Structures are given as structure tokens and as C-alpha cells.
Image (tube, rainbow, N blue to C red; front, side, top):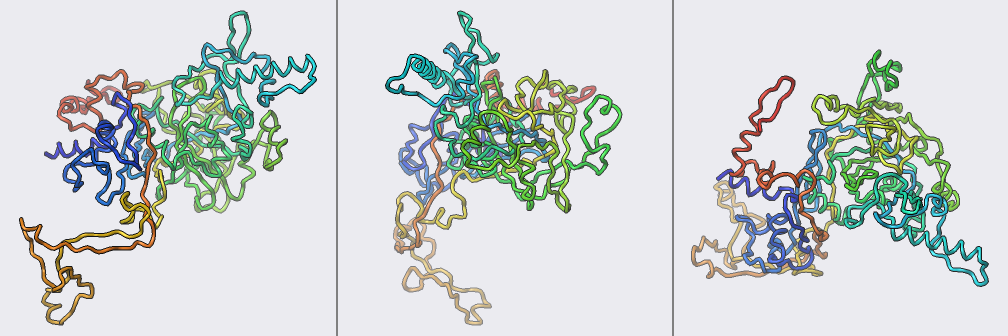
Length: 608
């Protein structure tokens, strides 16, 4: 029985990407007819109408079936996990509160956006000729000819309009929502029939006419991000939870630091959700052990062989810095699949200019200067930043390490990938760790170096996906759908007399309960009527809450349950033995084998 009960609970938490059909979630504002949402009900709403929950509604066709007894809509629940390097991070959403719990001291790399958006040519579609790149950067949209324009002007306008049409129709940014758009990945230049050479991609400043005027008043993108990939491609064990979270009312709202880091440029960052650190979670910086000879990162083979770098991770003083933490979804250059990343923007309040940078070159810089709306704080990159540390009065310089990360000493031993060093420059990381690689994305400044693992973050995060719970009207008794817009609610109770003192001490002293409550009119205690409950009088009364109640809501989301990546290859039996269903009967034998570990010569291996 215990195992059965456990299964019932765990079913609520199973990541939904193991299912094979896509369905939309039921509306949070209108009635939900379960016949139309059987699968979504079983997955996201397994808690609705479950046994022994005093649900009080048996008819799934009841438009109030997916509500509480007071008519407040039930909210979807989902959980999953994402793992890289054998280290899992768990993501859940309950009652429109998202939680991400991973490991303490997760290593981060630094990068900075350069104010551009990369767009890709569609496969099989005409592209922008290589020699027209600069001309395209200056396009201002469709141009109408002036009366009396000469032949040369007509040809120029006609060429510009054709280029604009090709750019608008045939080039798009990488976005998981463009599932039918076939990006022309590969080399930068494609040689078409006839020898014409087209650009497979082109970087456009955010002020370009292709993006309308949406970024016309955008603040300068002048702050770096610290980031780390925390999922595999398309996050196969997490998809439904993240797909639900990223479309909620609280998602894709970027703070002031995030905007200065470009996190609100949706063409680059497909989805971002801002999170808060739990109280005991923090950010850590490697400030070294105080030895100027050994604290800096070794830079040569000779240094690596002759000295040991001395590390000292200390907690950043959160009272002296401003920090914004995000979970973001983004694809790497030349890869159609997106990944989940942890990201944070950190700014020392007393040292802002040293964090700010804009390269004084290129169309983005020219546009900023021309518009003149915002001051440019610094045009000098700072690759030796300092930060405030707890219990330290002076700012401390931070140091990166030469390796991939402080937890990645066993990649070669375990055969999980090449042993990799810190790429030590910004830019495209799509060929990492080979070749002349960068550390993040092609729309990054090369001169803002990653400082690998100079900053660590505790992955212990939460966020509200709807309104904050500090709202005094939230979830009041009049927040249900049947009381919409009303402050008063009528209640029904069966008559009884409550609160009469019977303790000998109170009887002897003549104490009287100041909160006695009499629903009978004659102070008569109503004993259990048994089968005669219908004979007990019903009393009505009204409460006025003084304000209209509100409830948490959620956005409807079309979820794709098709298995992704590694799950496509797994058998149905394998998927039924998900980690959260370890006690399910069909999995018992497989689980007993899986956890019978046999010690090998250098490490442990799982018996298959």
C-alpha cells in the first residue's frame, strides 16, 4: 500500500516529455471540460479530484471541476531535471511558484553582448550577396522613389528594396518557436548556382529596421553576464516543466541590469525567467590566497608545470552589489537546438564604470552616438574586475582558472568529453574545445574574457510566475469565480453551540469564553446526528472582505510531449521506469539491477 501511495504522489511530478502527444493546458479563467483535456488533466492536474482530497466534485464535465471548494482555479504542477557532467538540477512549478535546486558553487563564465542580433538564411532561399553586407546594415526599410528621380537613383532604390525584401522574408533569428524554419547552418558563405555567394547569416544592430522600432529606446548594452549551460540539448528530461514556466505571466520580465546586459533582446535570448536566491544561497568569488605570484591564472605550459594556482572562494557581499539571476534559453551558433543556462548580472554599486563597456566601433556604437539618448560610460574593457567580499573592507580582484571548471577534473577519465581548458576570450563557442574558439556566442565581444570560474553561484532559486503573495487581496474567500467582483460572500453552517468552557478550573472560577459562538439561538450543543444530519438546521451569514479578491492565474500553454534527444532512443519500458517511479511494479527488477553497483578497477560501474 505504501508503494501504491508513493506512486500516486510521484505521478504528479513526472516530467511530461516522456509522453508522445501535444496538448494545450486548460484555461485558468474559463471552465475546463476534462473530456477535452484528459491527458493534460492526468499530467499537469493529477492533483485535481485525486482520492481523499475532499474535492467535492465528481463530474469531470463540471466547469468548476478544476477549482477549489471556494471556486479558486487549480494551477498546473510539473517537475523535471536537467543534467550536465553527471550533476542534476531539479526544476518544479507548484502554485505558480517555480523552484530550481541544483548544486552549491556552480562555476560561471563571463561574456558580454555586443548590441547585435544574428539572423540566419532559410535553406533553399535566396540570400544576401556577400558584397552587399554593409549595404544591408544601412537599410532603412522600403523606400519610395521621389518624383523626377534619375535612372541611377531608381536602380539604387530598387536594389535596396530587393535586399530588404530578401532580408525580411528569408532571414530569421534562432528560435525554438520557429519549428518549421529550416536554418541554413554551415559555413558563413554559401555558393549558389551560377557562382553567386550568399551570406548564411548576418549580424544586425538591434536598432536595425528588421526589428521595427522595438529597441529604439533600449539602454546601452554595456554590462557583462556570467553564465553556464545547465542542460543538454533540448533538455529532454525537463521540457514540459520549462515550457510551462517560460510562458507564464512572470516570465520574460527583465530587470534594469538584465536590460543593460541585453537579456531582453528576445531574438538572442528566446526566453528568460528572473529568479531569486534562497536566503542561504549566494555568489562566490575566487580572490586568491593573497600571494600575487600564485593567485593569478597560469598562462603558459611552463607556468602550469612549475606552479600551482592558489584559489580562495569567498562569499560576495550582497549588501554592496546589485545582482539579478536568470534562467535563460538560448541556442549556440550553428546549432538549431536550444539549451537552458543559468545567468547572472552583477554590478558593484561603488565601481559601476569598471563593469561597463561598449566597443567604440561598428554600427551599434555609431547608432548609440547618433541617437545620443544615453551616455556611454566606458569604452575600455576591464578584464581584471574587482568585487565586494563579505567581511572585507576593500574590493578584491577576482581570478579565473585555466581549466573548463573547478568540478571538471575527470572528463577524460570518465570518457564524457575532451579535457578542456578555459577558452580565455569572448565570442562563438560552437567549436569548443577545438580550434580558435570563444567562450559563448558570436554576438559577444571577443575582448571581454570569460574568467572561467572566477565566479560561482549556488543553484538554489525560486520565483513567482504570477503576482506576489504580498497582495492583500490574494486568495481571499471571495476570490473564487462565482464571487467575481463582489466583496461579500454568503456562508452556510449547520447549527451548533461552540466554545462553552467545561474544564474544571474554568467552571470553578466561573470563567466565560469571550468568543462563545451560538448558531442555535438557545445555547444547545448539537451532538452528532448520525443519519439524521439533514434534520440539523442550517444557518446563513455573510462576510464582507472589504475588497475584491484575486487569485493566481496562469497562461495556457501548448505543450509538446514528444520525446526529445536521448529519450527518442529509449524504449517505452525504459521510459516507464523513470527515476520518480522507481517503486512502480514493472520497474522493480530493473531498479534492483541498476543499483547493484560493482566496483571496477578505477571507478564504479552500473550492472546492466
